[in-house]
Length: 211
Image (tube, rainbow, N blue to C red):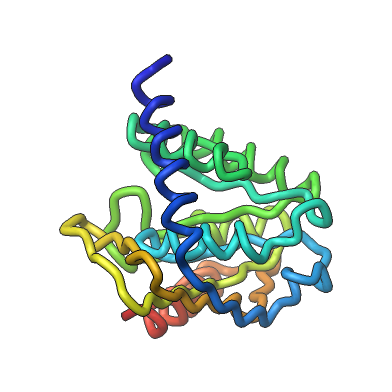
């Protein structure tokens, strides 16, 4: 078994043990949890909130009622490990970034949404700068008509890693509060100014809820 597969399997095991001790509260302003909102969505959240949003998916996503979530991960070796973890936790992964496989990944995500699937993107990943909203999520929404959903996660007790994004690891027996914010539709025919205004608006929404 490849080293990346071993590390991914170990990561899945450790996360399931950790997540079993954590309480999660979700403020679902879209209606995804009860499948009241039936159209595909593009979930956007900061890279350092990955674990909080993942726990929300495991606990609250209506498995069996919606087609599932596809996560955009880096094409790097670390991204391969993350893709393995994502698969082990019941999601799908597409590999790509703005610098490598970007156009191929975008086409794969478009096909996912056209098949009614949901997509999750960390717009400041995989390498930052932290809390900088790249254009990819808006481009994807513009191409597919899927609404953007900003997601926020706050942690009662956690460790913040000394990484570019200050990656957050919740402590055992802590709690996480997640907000699925109201949908933001993106028209196909945005001008450059409107595109930038949409990108900046979501960046501000996410940054204002970051701690």
